[in-house]
Amino acid sequence: MSSPKKSFWKLAIPILCFVLFSAVYGLIDLYWVSKLDAQSFYAVSVSLPLFTLICAMGDSIGQGTNSLMSRSIGARDYENAYRAIFHGIIICVIVWFFIMLCVPFLDDLLIFAGLNKSIDLTLRYLVPTFLFSIFFILPNFFSETLQSEGDSKRPTIIIILGNILNLVLDPILIFYFNLGVGGAAYSTIISSLITTMIFIYLYASKRTKVPIHFRFSKLNRHVFYEITNVAFPNFIIDSLFCTISVFINGVLIRDLGQIGVLLYSTSIKIQDILITPLKGYGRGLMCVSAQLFGSRKIKELKEFYLYVLKVSTATMMVIYIVFIIFRDPIYYSFSIWGMESGVKYIAIFGTFIILTRVFLVMDYKIIDAFGKSYYNLVFTVIFIFLQIALISILDFIIPYGSSVLIGILIAQVIMTIAYEVFIMHLFKKFEKEIEENTLAVI
Image 1 (cartoon, one colour):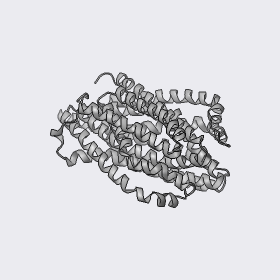
Image 2 (cartoon, helix red, strand yellow):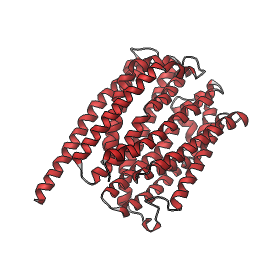
Image 3 (spheres, helix red, strand yellow):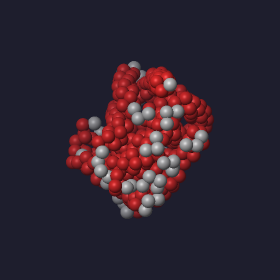
Image 4 (cartoon, rainbow, N blue to C red):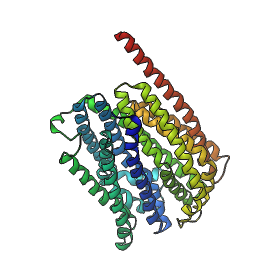
């Protein structure tokens, strides 16, 4: 492998462009729906956690496959990398089957979560999304597998082209064909279908370094275990974040009404844009760190990790300063009353939140690189319950939904400290193991 820093930037920059465009695309998608009416905007807003969870399934399986492929490539075990991608595809198809089985229970799920307003509009968006979820899962999966072999440019270009197609189809299906909320769903499905077909063509025509070989298609329990060892905790983590989103929506509905949910969903989309560099840096960190870990270069890995932390912190501080200056025009673009009120909170607490997000994202990704994602699961469970407890307590003290932001902020500060202490412990442990192995050989 070339210099870790060079490999990092080679991976991170295209991924950063991809994540930025995806975040902007998500915001524009929400923008078009906001022009229908408040009920349609609400319906898509409450659907976002579930839609995000579906996409995250492909991402989680892809990260598990990516981690195994990167470690295998670092150890020069290329046959294991071939097995990994084939087994990852099988897991994607199995997950799709179970998602489709959930369709008859969607209305009950929404009612149970207390999101029974505009339920018909919400189902118009969610039902087709669940039925055709394989087209959201596979593009995220293939993006990760290509990144494991050092190719982040092609998946970035493919995903961006798909998103552009979605943006073109959105107003056509929503307004011209008068499909409303359903048009937003079908435009996403059509664009994702085309994106999936392009990825399949790349692999079918063997235009990748790690192609899909059917002679490595024999099912292997160990490969399944290695992929799910990273993917399953990530999936549970995404499910927990979906749960906390539903919980927060419930608090905001009670305190502020529908406007609270609209404010929260838009704020989340804007924050997705602001933390784009973190996502790009995090994926670059995971790919490079997995190869360094596979080759047991722990000292070099630790130096690289600290380098990425410094770059991430400096980048986020600059972005938040710029955002605070131009915050008002961003929120005023949404023609929903009260949307601008969230700016004050983000402007005041933004600097503190972004510092914690840097460490949380990078520590999360480097643990994935170690293939020890169950640690992330434990930390996330603690994090979710801590947020729920703090928000519930503060909701009795602080009115108008402010408890949500302050509760999240305090929880992030606590978890940042805990994560960082644990990461330093892992580095010391790995260094000690290598030192002991070296002495044993001597």
